[in-house]
Image 1 (cartoon, rainbow, N blue to C red):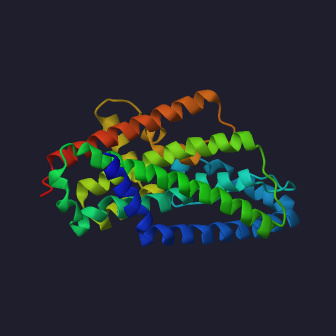
Image 2 (cartoon, rainbow, N blue to C red):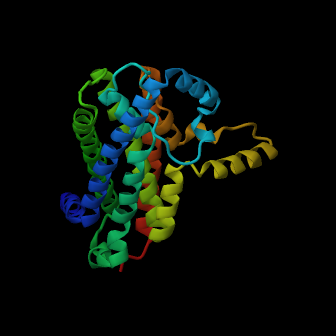
Image 3 (cartoon, rainbow, N blue to C red):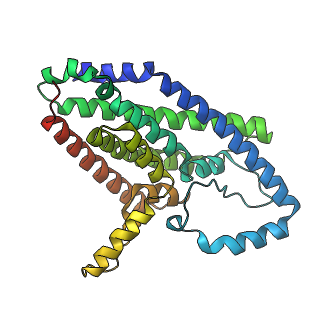
Length: 285
């Protein structure tokens, strides 16, 4: 088991796609900070018009009404933009999740697509270990990616904005820790889909659609069917990980934190068990 974990970690850190994704992420974070600074300066100059615009757009604040991705900084006009504000904007905008799911597809199917798994898959007595090692590697990738995002945001705030203001550090690190768990759950979902279909194109499209909230169409269709068969008005979006990533407040309570942890663990557990089942039944030879 330990050898499998070492193998997957070695394979992950040797992958060129890993560093390409991180480099693009760093560049986009600097770009996001610069665009935020530009928009914020314009908002300060036209504060009255800005407030009127925000009031007009306030009616469509729910994530399930928005397609695509958006980065909205919660800083009030006239205040300094903090590291926490920018972290919240990029994470809740599902920018980090997009890079995460793309790598999850590449990593989960790399040994399957190359045929490398046939060299050792048939010799492994407990194939569940293959899923556990992949999952742990993705957990490490998720944690390192969020760490890179945090460090990059600190540097970009200092360079682009010209000052460094942290915000509430206690809440910020609790927020990042909870988002780490939510993002890992998303990575497990995408890994399971990629292992199931064994098709990178479909898996990548599904992952991108998930991050861009395009799955709302599917959820709405299911809700209509459930209503027709008499199961009431069930809002499926409330039970999706992507909804929680986008709608998790900066000032979440302990009760919300407990619900997010339980929901994440449920998704992680279900996807892990299903992936293990697929590996047990699939011919690796």
